[in-house]
Length: 136
Image 1 (cartoon, rainbow, N blue to C red):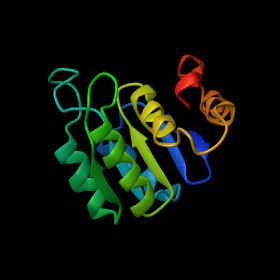
Image 2 (cartoon, rainbow, N blue to C red; image 1 turned 60 degrees about the vertical axis):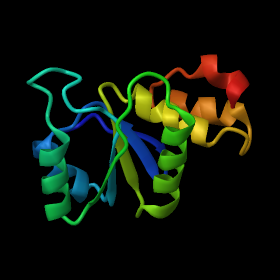
Image 3 (cartoon, helix red, strand yellow; image 1 turned 60 degrees about the horizontal axis):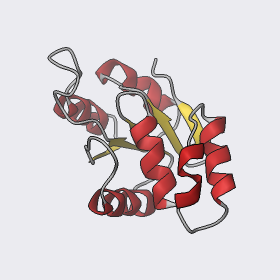
């Protein structure tokens, strides 16, 4: 089973998932998967998005591909924010370790409240985003 880390009632992150995780993810009540890890980043052994999408959709989950490397660009943040606003919840976003996904989530919430609250929510999920506090 994937290492799912709850951030809010409607959003969680996880390190890389694969098709075998999806039934448990659906059974846990998730409605949407956001993929933030580009195919091939981890070599030939990395599960591919297409296979994950196919299995997710066969289980009735919405699948949104927003792959990126490094810091998220304004376009990535816009796409991520749109997915958060429009996709059925709860949402599970994944990447290699979950850090990219939680960072994109945090930056989409910048200016929408206390940066401390965002950093605390990420910390509760096991991610240290204190270096981003000034941007939030």
